[in-house]
Length: 119
Image (cartoon, rainbow, N blue to C red):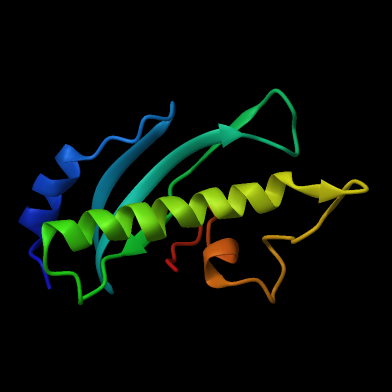
């Protein structure tokens, strides 16, 4: 497992070229977390935005810089974008895949402002 000081250094290198996105660090009871702050258009309230900051527990298996950045890109960012894509895609005005439904994968259901989870 990587040390929190290393995570903080690596996070300073990260940029995601989308307006309203940033990355932070948090130490919680269950381990080290990367917080992905994302401001997105609110599909339920057109013309408005909302910000979420889900926390992703850094997996113990991550040991290298490359693994860390791959995990942020392929798990953290991809999970949020998939959730938002599911929010926005509708057929006849209804969710095709409701990202908040109980049977959806964790990446789709655990992104709220009060609940922290990770895929």
